Image (cartoon, one colour):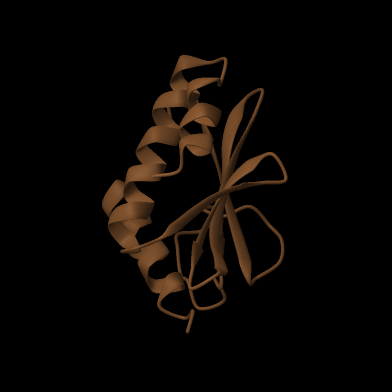
Length: 115
């Protein structure tokens, strides 16, 4: 794991966001064996074979998590924010329950498209 990503997460101001980011990081590493971590544009990016797989970041009221190569992903209505079909974003707010198994499946599915 990249120390810059650890530092990014440890320096987040809100404790609940730290926990979400740590959880997302673990899910990513489980879903994409050998994933590369890189702090880029001030945010943790995760790459497979040098190509973007996902990125996370924080804002005042949520943690933003974007999955790349996501055109084929299917999720319940309003699970993802509206936007580019190849980049699907969820906003996780304080107290929101995250289905780790489902999110891991989505990450794994999208990453399988990276050759």
